[in-house]
Image (tube, rainbow, N blue to C red; front, top):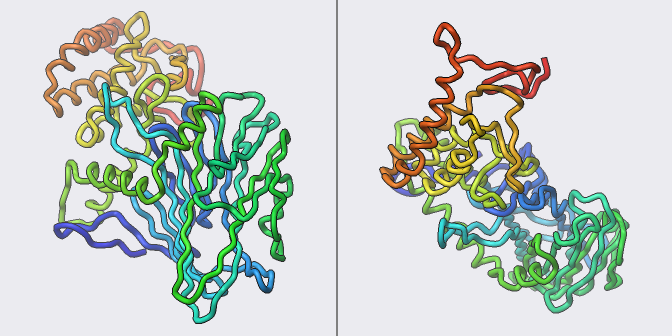
Length: 444
């Protein structure tokens, strides 16, 4: 593993690692969605914080030699891990070098309350360069599992003008997904044959048809390439969606920037954030750790139906926890104070009738949970986090707005004192329902 050197004598968080040594790929996030990359470099899944489930499963790219019909296997290559993206560089058996990049569109928020953000969009870029001495003819097949996390039948179609597969499920007809290709494919298909893109022989031209309704459909783009020595071919795939129906999904896809522009916008946002609250110590690993902490903060900042928030498992959970939000603010206040302000305010604005801070809420609908406890650690933690936000930002208007709520929460804490002056919590259960502080999810 190698860390690149950049800037005024400090190491920036960009790493190179053999693709034979990668235990797990990156998790990349944006305000509306997050993705996971497999250890192989393929895209594993995209999770929507608004839909509350995976909207896509794997996106995998394979290559075949057109003349012999054999699959082009990759030689050992290298992953480049960046705060805003993950890259994969390797060579195929025919001498063609492949350079892939995967990232989420994630530019700086703007507008009133910074509620204007980029739409959810994942990009998978591919560059093929013939470094050999002979002209090569090859075919690329990119396959996408369209059902995501839904179990009901999936309806699929193909939008020729946008070069995109369109999918929705019967259980959530308004959650419409689109998988698009930047280049005109030589053929396309929606199939139930999941082995087609791993065939031992060149699959050939696809049928240019979709399946109206089925379970777990596989969408495939097929692109042919003829590359002379030194020639390149570049293209990319875009995965996006809307929870507001097909019209909005098409509008979203049409509004997205091309891959180069999207990556530049995302890189600038990360570069600006990583440049805030710079810590430089004699220990390089500490410096890199702080840089990665800031990068990871950006990856989990979500804008859901309830506003700005974050969850501690952004590709599986819809619950934002008060203690996590409070502790997050101690670092986030120095990097993205507007985000931490908004995420803390939700809890201050939703105290229980008695004044206690809730355990967590569902970021889609605001449903809260207290586990039936009469006191928890979330309440004092939120008070401390609200004070920390003011100390860092000096925002007097924020202090004046939250002080009555923090005072009410503090008075509730005092009301739970026992005869010896100590604060007590009464609970009838075990595990989550019996532990007032941080807990692993255990029942005994």
